Amino acid sequence: MRLTAIVITVILILLQGCASTSDKEAKGLEPLYFPPPPDQARFVFERTVQASSQIEKGSTQDELRSLLTGVSADGKAMSKPFDVSVCKGHIFVSDTVLRSVLVFDVPGKRFFEIGKVKPGLLQKPLGLATDDECNLYVADATSKRILMYDQAGNYLKSLGGQDWFDRLTHVSVDAEGTRVYAVDTGGVGSENHHVLVFDVNTGKHLRNIGKRGTEQGELNLPRDIAVDPRGWLYVVDGGNFRVQVFDSDGEFVRQVGQLGRQYGHFARPKGVALDGDGNIYVSDAAHGNFQIFDGEGQLLLFVGNRSETFERAAYMLPAGIDIDEDGRVYMIDQYFRKLDIFRPVEIGENEGFIGAWAK
Image (cartoon, rainbow, N blue to C red):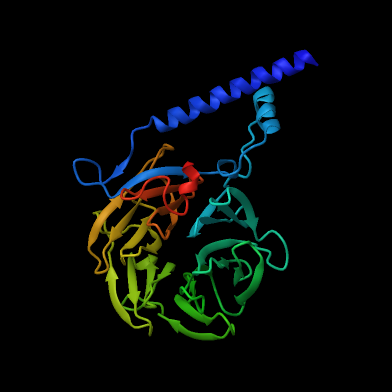
């Protein structure tokens, strides 16, 4: 027994040494700023998230088993992440292979999944959105419903259904949680390339916005959608290589971007998000980055680059993107199965809703 105790003590010392070395090495990386020097930085790369073990503290038994057997206790890892939505330190990530929404509760330092049990069972979760109460809205492609959950993952209700969509992909919601905007991406043989608006309380379909086409106000393979405090909509018009802006009445306001290889242009626009200043963030799967535009559509900055190598701020298949209340940017990469987080330089790593991650 005494020998066993000595062995365990030695292992624990080794574990502490390994953890210290790992932390030191991670902190030893040079900060990655955007834009890079000598320009004044606006964002700094903060962290990459891939598995539940990054938020959950493993038990001593798990750590011992890992050291003795070589089997890593990685927890639940992302398999094919698609979209991300963040509310008050809760990071929601949809995963089409796991058929659930992964939840990283940073203030609570815990991990859980949404959509694994009936009646809120998810089959193919795609787009995500949250309202000001942190209620979660999930676009499920298979059931063609928008499922609604509270912050703890309790199922509340659903909207839509098989008769409403050809190809439901994304969802957005106003801050009050009264209007839901669902994207029907349609397809080659479909005319349903539009946004459907529903009343959350009654479930009633209110109207459609857009129709298939290439003119202003028309959509071709629409993808992600975001709504601002005025009720204006920002729709990724994928087949027309632009973002279209509609007012609260569904009338066309302007377009952002166009097809091209230059900065400010799009090749495969995927996700869209808005910050507190009304700036527009658009991820592009071909460029391997996200670009930031002001409210008038002028390019401000691009972040990231395309790469076949796993590294910070490098992407092969970027998808969903979101901005939290503190201005942090969250972007999914499906190829590398990761979520990258960028922090505005004016706030410290210990500050804001997910500042607890650094403590």
